[in-house]
Figure 1 (cartoon, rainbow, N blue to C red):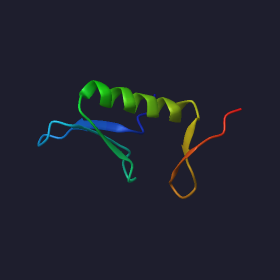
Figure 2 (figure 1 turned 180 degrees about the vertical axis):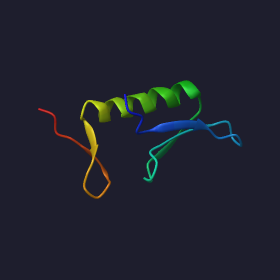
Figure 3 (figure 1 turned 135 degrees about the horizontal axis):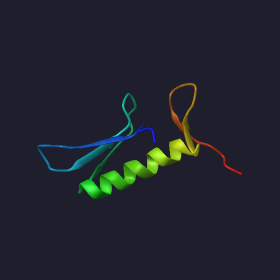
Figure 4 (figure 1 turned 90 degrees about the vertical axis):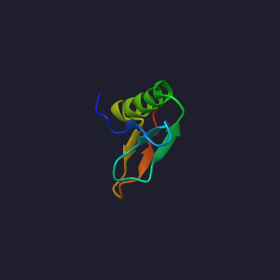
Amino acid sequence: MKEVMLHKENPLTGEWLCWIPDTPQAYYFSTKKKAKEFCDKVNKAFDVGELKFDEDGRIVKVNVL
């Protein structure tokens, strides 16, 4: 699975940041487990084609039949 969304701990607050590089998409989680689960879910959506980047670099949901 390609990692589109990454996660790491904020050393100042102890919160976990999930973000997609070069986009404004970022989310904070209180635990590493929650952050990893969320990132894995987003990454899987990109992998299976439910999400993609459009020609302007925005994230769009793909209509799956």
